[in-house]
Figure 1 (cartoon, rainbow over the protein chains, first blue to last red):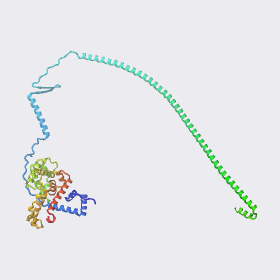
Figure 2: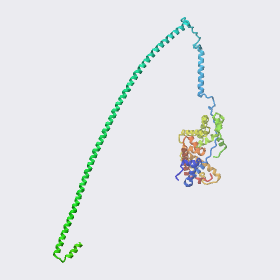
Figure 3: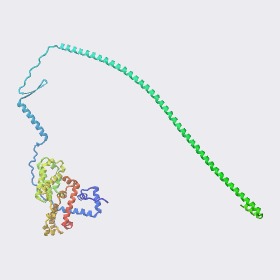
Figure 4: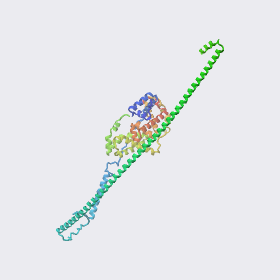
Length: 285
Length: 209
């Protein structure tokens, strides 16, 4: 068990401010640790002793807080603003009264004046005496003149525009046709060239390849033949050697046999008595 | 702490605080009557001095009446009030040349220890004299309390005598709950050591505390 309550947990436990799992943990720890239990007991004893300090009786002196009347609050920000606005309005009214300010609004004009209102002079003199019909005629004439001028202008510009558009179209279509033609021609030639190039290149490549392979093959076959010839030669010489050695050994054998026969013959000739035994011996041999 | 009528009244003073907050002087007066004893005793245990304790508590309540309408949460009144009290206690401590915590040797009255009274009180005795012994023990404890530094002293008094929760103390002092518990632990440890040094234990005091 690794849990060991620190002083903080212990304090909370002693004063009953520990709950749930933590409390159980501490109690479990205390049940197995004698010394910790003794410490808790000491603390409880100390608390009991401290309990002997009793409260002192005391009589509360009267406490007057004179300046804490629920008085009108001059410090309220709204009140200040409202009061200042009211004061400035009053000032404006008083000044207006003193200077005898007059403000008038009539017929689309605002008039501010100090003192008496001065009536402005009437300035309604007629400059010329044109009748409404004349004016109408003049207006009509100028309007129609204007209209015709605009019409003419417009037509002229329309025509010019049309002409230029047509010209442009013609020129452009010719150009485009030519360009397309050129482009198609050029491309045909190019393709032909390209294909021819490709073909010749291919042919060359294939030829080269065949040439290369044929020479290689030739060389290889030559090598093969030479090797085979060499091998055959070797085989023959070795065979010859074998035959030679066989012949030699045969020769040797016959010479030995010859000598023996000679010997036997001579011995038969020299001592006839022993002829039978030597014959036997030879048979045995 | 046995619950007296006063305690119950203190528990259910929300409406009163609300009225006091709105400037009802009568309610403010009632509030002072309700809490004066607690704050005075807190300050008294802190200073071990009646005059200083009276001064600090009066300042606390004057301040309370003045700034009550700034209190946001009525349920926090208790910790708010103790916060003011702690601040005034600290201020008084600073004024009195900072060092109101004496070493136990200077506070301890050696003559009293040698006197016959002390001799008898350290033995097991019967009821008539137990009263005397208790008051002696109380004096010793109070002096022992003064040897703690003021940070530990505040916490020990608030927890042990004012019955505040660790959470509330943390709020009053503006520190973490763990710091409060740690201070409490070392405060108690300090007291225990002093009492052990004086050979005051469960056995010498008697079982029926």
